[in-house]
Length: 195
Image (tube, rainbow, N blue to C red; front, side, top):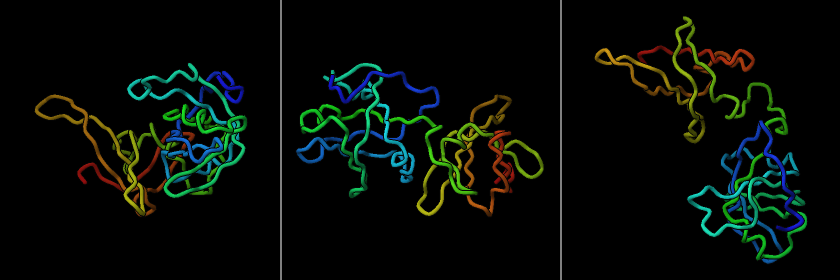
């Protein structure tokens, strides 16, 4: 293992933000594929936590086991993603060996969002209720549809006397979202169960 990669425990509040796609150039830079168009958190932190690729992509991966932390010396936007220079990695071979590694940061390292803005990770798991107080479901995921995001809710419905999991989608825009109360873990929406 390179001295640039220091064994570490993964922080309890770690959020996976992207992957190393491949080497970039001949001087040890890597190409990053962020999971979101909002890359502020990656730019805000110089210490990234890496985990090996998921098992199905890890064939032959032997650079490290568990989790390591590395220091980003330089990061910039490039084409459809980002490119980074990692302190202590200055040749293409080592950069290539990191292909597929998952990049995480502790949620506590994220920059504070502007008023009325939220990180997707902060919305997942929140309960959504309408103005009448009826529960509409729990945010399972968010989906980007270009100019807006859509909350993907999971709820239980009864069909022919049997409960089953169902999905409901609500645009995450001010026209439908009245309030997001992270402390209470609740979102209030102008939405009805039969929409």
